[in-house]
Length: 64
Image (tube, rainbow, N blue to C red; front, side, top):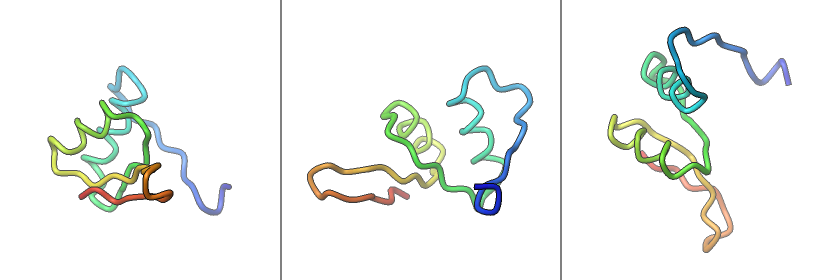
């Protein structure tokens, strides 16, 4: 896992969703993968891409 992922410290974030949003805003090459509709809405508001699972298509979808 350590070869594929990196651990980051996001100061000033109140929740995990806030931390993911801050990370995505600070790092333009970051794409958040989530099943959380509220987080996806917040990412969309900022024009940030995200990956989510769509059951009807049995696969991952990229929303940009």
